[in-house]
Image 1 (cartoon, rainbow, N blue to C red):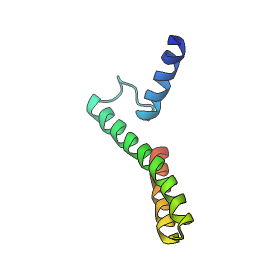
Image 2: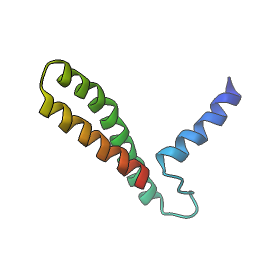
Image 3: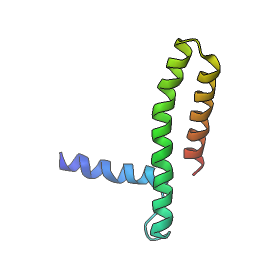
Image 4: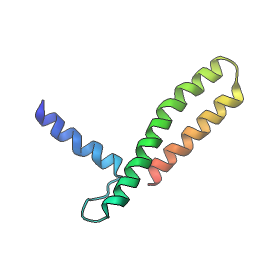
Length: 80
């Protein structure tokens, strides 16, 4: 189990820091990028199901807004 955790942890850290190495950038910059990525991932996780619920309940404008916001957050994750 430890081997899998050791493999998994750097992969998650690499995603959260957007591939920034610790020696290349200031720790404050990495902290800000990690915070932005965590908030964006959390937003996408919540907005997609809420968009589905909005469409099921017939609130199409709200569903489109949820999906558009989730798309913007995904593009932010890919860009940064």
